[in-house]
Image (cartoon, rainbow, N blue to C red):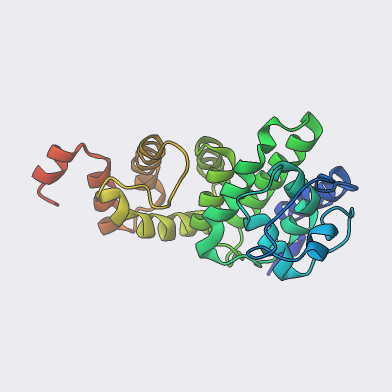
Length: 244
């Protein structure tokens, strides 16, 4: 059996992680950055964010990326990003918090950073996504990583396109697992995760994509395919369908 760490997808991810380390080397939080001593941490911990390239302990790293009230969230995220990305890939963040991770990326405004920086972040997210789709046991399940990537980038389109283009049995298995988890929410016209973006547009894009691509990829999952088809119907037609 092939060692997953030797696959091209893993090699691409490793290159992306290395590139983050190079691109964001020397970054710090702003010299005048402040944070609440009562609720976030000590002045000494804040001072560590103003020292470049110093590794933070896991608890401080977690409090740093989660805090919603930095004066310059982008500068703070750039300071911790190389370590944060490796922690994410290593499974340091629980599945239930992936939407928060995506929101942290979005708050940073990374898509408005200088070209070199935003290209490095984009390649990391795409490399991680591609690797996870072919990993039989990813540290973050595909459905949760899709949430992270969507919230980080404010779009579903490139992530679904990559999934669609990948003809791989493991990717299909992840699709079956994800669709099973999503079906109940989609049937009630809800997006299966909380979002700061356009919920209706994301939900419509997701269910339309599922209805178009699951019939050929998940042929052994008849009951699931019926649920997806129903979710894709407008509400009156859905209720009148004999399978409702």
